[in-house]
Image 1 (spheres, rainbow, N blue to C red):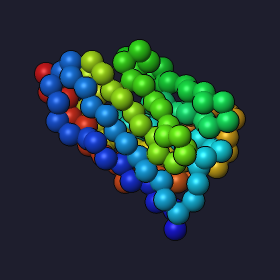
Image 2: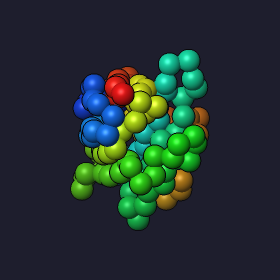
Image 3: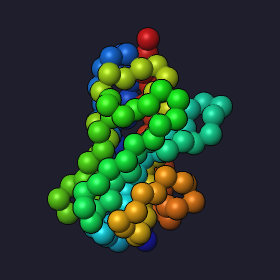
Length: 128
C-alpha cells in the first residue's frame, strides 16, 4: 500500500518560514515525480511545485502571487522524500498543502489528474 505522509505544517507569522516534508512508503518514486499542491478555504486545489528525479529538475506554479523565489522544492538523495521550504510567507499562502507522487519521470506534471498518489494534507496558516 502506497502512503504519502506530510509533516511540518503549522502557524507562522507573515514573513516567517516553514519547511514541509513528505515521506513516501510502499513504493519508490526514485524515478518519478513528486509535487506539492495547496487548497485554500473556498478555493480549488492549485499546483505549487514539482520535481522529477531523472535530472533533478524543478518547476513552480505561477497562479496568483507566484511562489517562485519564495518556495524551494527539493528531494532526498534516495528520492522518496520531498520537501517544500517556504520563505517570506504571506497570509495568502494559508492553505492545506498536499503532497503528490507519480511514477512518471522526466516530465513536468502540474495537473492533479497526473498524480496517482496523494497525502492527507498538512495545514499551513500564516497570520498577518
